[in-house]
Image (tube, rainbow over the protein chains, first blue to last red):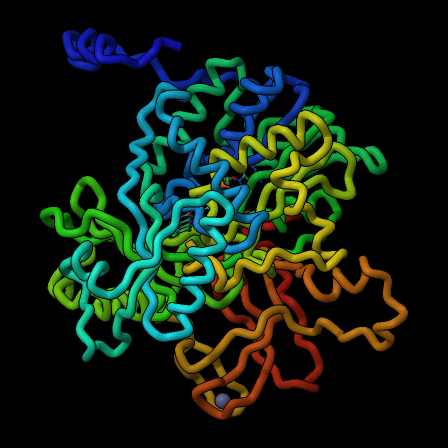
Length: 416
Length: 101
Ligand SMILES: Cc1cc2nc3c(=O)[nH]c(=O)nc-3n(C[C@H](O)[C@H](O)[C@H](O)COP(=O)(O)OP(=O)(O)OC[C@H]3O[C@@H](n4cnc5c(N)ncnc54)[C@H](O)[C@@H]3O)c2cc1C
Ligand SMILES: [Zn+2]
């Protein structure tokens, strides 16, 4: 791998940028690997990278049915934060945020991580009490978090409608200054390039169609490019988790739902931070290109079609205009959907399974982009040691049997 | 927007309905006799089918009755609507692209 630097940029400028080397090889799949990761989204690629970098497992492959980042990784609204309520969640997401803070350097790839801060608005007394509780919990867990009153919020976000006449008046907010956004595609590409440099085979257009078991043990996977053997298989396929679980003959506590996002036409810089509201249920930021990046809630029904319903578009736009009436004349440019795998307690599953050698990383639902580095880091540990790290042990499948759920529903500000 | 055929009111827009999840999950008759694993399976695990899904809907802004539907979870096409107590309509006998074989 040739290192990216100011010098490589200058050198390539001289040849009109026509000689940049490919970011990763695209080898033919081998007959056997020490481990296979199914799913070339951010979480799968990060898992492969940390397996190779930290656990010395280099004979591994990432199998992706489409293109890298073509799932939720390349479809999300890129909010990164770690101000979760419960200790277990705060620890996992904060580990991730710490990795984000050094990620561009670590990968030698600019993931455009921008710590522009995230505001979670409160609109009534109960909101404010919940926010205060969460801010206190965050601080006890060493996660930066601040409680702001209405005047502070208005000063920081001049366009926000803080009028007492608003249908849902703003009373205050929680604020995490180290939170922000990142470039989603770059995260997939950066991890892929760095993993490839460590010897990981990244294989696109390779759909897994079956998981083979020998009794209680996994032995390999059938793919659109033939059978591949491996004693360890990590499944990281987000919305398709139940489909893969079915192939292995196990059941999962996840359901797949469409989640939509929207961008407007590009306008001049008007919003230099991220604003989210649970009560009116919408969130917004502005990309470096100038378009407003908008999202809200899932479509209520189960679905695998990567699109959603118009009712949700209408609801989302109403929520954004409640917060920012000035945007009523901005034209929306594009809308799309991803398929998110939601868990009953709105927390992920990073776990061994009843099948030996088979591991699942799923259930991130509407909010796993922020967790990409930490998820890959903890899942790599789990695969390498056949044991969860203490960070992800609470997120094992057996919590649904013991009843020790981590109920981040509603607790986590907003679900993204 | 989806349109649903409420068995009581006729064809209406999705915005009048709320989704009730997977249908026909029978409540265990003897909950005390279940192991923790079986109880967890009943409470939390779902088939989450990629293909034809039997599901519950409530006509929330209409007659407020619950009913069942069969829907293709990839194309979102409904193939049947039926009332509680009706005989179960068959699942369509065609494959759905991308579904588990
Ligand atoms: C509209 C939207 C907005 C969101 N906003 C945010 C946000 O602001 N902040 C945040 O933190 N999170 C957000 N999320 C959630 C976040 O995008 C996901 O949690 C995260 O990206 C999941 O990453 P992943 O790598 O696990 O999954 P994915 O990126 O979906 O990758 C899974 C991959 O598996 C592949 N695959 C599936 N089946 C197979 C098979 N049989 N064989 C081989 N490969 C297969 C898929 O093609 C896909 O590329 C949002 C999601 C959506 C849809
Ligand atoms: Zn009706």
